[in-house]
Image (cartoon, rainbow, N blue to C red; front, side):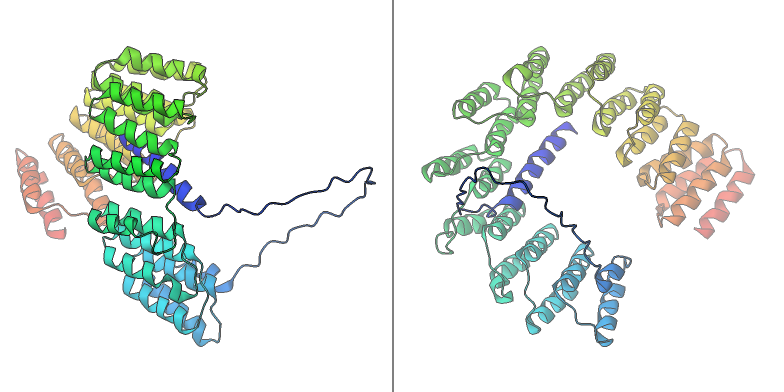
Length: 462
């Protein structure tokens, strides 16, 4: 759990840098100081709010992509002249719904009517194609950007490079990376980070180092994200000493480690049973100019949970509150998860209540862990209580959790409660397979003819 959070933070940092790429201006302005200039009152210009665009405002209320497409044509038939915001809003909605044929139709309209587009629209589409594993469409769209009267910059180039790496198209990514000179583009630290991360995910340390060396040769400064990728890879491999060497090199070159850097090192130390050193490193962070964050506490709590030291993990939570660190849902989930795994669901439920009293809302994972935790110890009424709260919060358990609760409630003679769960499943169009139904029928019919008849009716209705 904590490793996925580290990866998410690193990806967020990468995404932020991608958005900022090519936005730096190189113009210099000079100012002549004015002495003894009399002060004059200037009227503050009140910025008027932008007028809402009728079509865009109405489109936001529509969730069905087909309906959105029909709505677009209805506006057109009424004489409404669609402009870039209209087209972009519709394309975003269609892409999120993976209605890509309609997306291409709308892109055709944009070309026919010579609508000038912004590059950010194509960047978003390339990302959507990448998530849908439609890599060839992403490549085609990238090469067509200029045909939409739109300037193609390093930002879209980096986006496509990431899509190729993410879809395991390393050969294409390498060809693209080697051809940046032909396109009149100069790769930046983000470009190199994407390639380095890709090779590391593939487990190829030597190739990642080759790209890193090329980065230095081209006078491109490595970022904290670059070093975090290298340190994280070494720590996951258990080579903490080498990771410390990279850390020292990072500091010597004037790069300031962040909380993620320290968390990666701490995770590496924990993996080789050096918990005390990891904890010491966290408390040394402040002296090195980096304030500890929740992610650092999360590393320690995860390691304590893995080693079954739940009470120490609870003490760490108390220590966080004492130091005025407000735990977030991830921290609470770590503790609840290990409490439930140890068969201590009742204690987990207390933490579950405490987090809400403290103003931290549970997420879907919190509810699922609690429901599964109660099922594990056979407390199906407790599981049902969590399920009710979960449904009110508009979250939904896994199918396995539904099955476990139904089976447990039937065995306990709680027929009405089992029927309630079946009804909730029906609302969400969740179905039990035949093998599960057979098991439920057997459990319900043992010594209870009435229950057997009721389950028979439910099978027929279901």
